[in-house]
Length: 361
Image (tube, rainbow, N blue to C red; front, side):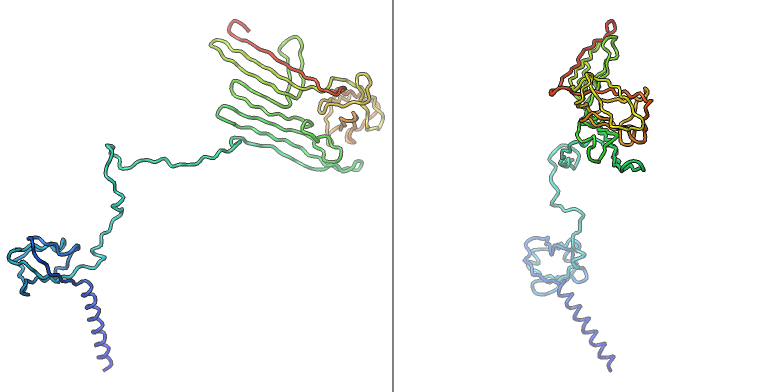
């Protein structure tokens, strides 16, 4: 008994579902026929559920009309059937829906004679100016300390900074800051920029160059007035090329604060210093130009620095030899240096021009 009741309920549910589906897709129309061709619907219709009636409710036979179910077009005699009634069912929406890859609204008519259906558009990229983007830096900065059984602990450091690269397609830059000894204890000797061992910056291209900082004024090509002098200033060089010759122009200007001097120190047995450096006229109050000194012991040049042979105080003109370099009375010590004996600076310039051709130089 229970099985029969369940079967009846399932049958009723199926019938109701079919009725709902049929009512959703089933349609009926009454049409006044004015021409022979009639469009029944905008989508395809089901041929199995199509019925056509006349005005008197009599069913019209299939031989009296023609129909295209895919296009929903009906063809019949409009004079014989001025009014008809149609019952039909359309297919589900997912079968009659139009599917397309591209939207037809974006299609525009052809306006140019070009055969290409597209136009290339260059994407806009905002380029930000990056200063010194083409420069590369390299170098090292080392720090350490020195300690011994006969000296105090000393902190020291080495600096080597190199900058090079292109500022533009034709202009290059080169700069350098070098110091082999940067003491960190009180009274150190590298406290200002002009006390570094070497500082310069140079701009150059294929035909010109400008260099500022520590430069060397050198004249070794001529037989007269040969010199090699380290100064702080500006040097400019330019090359002018002609058809069969070229001209080299150079000019430099620098500030010289001191004059050259040579002093002989009498060494004392087991005395590391300080030893006083005097001037050409035995001046005791001197201001030695930093980095201008060269110390010779028995004809051998020494190296300046806490971890080398000696240290020097430029303000008091005193030199102290490190414990690693013991001094005895048999040593012959000579110091060559530049010192400032005036309250103003001197200016020196070195300029010239060279012309060279096949017949003249």
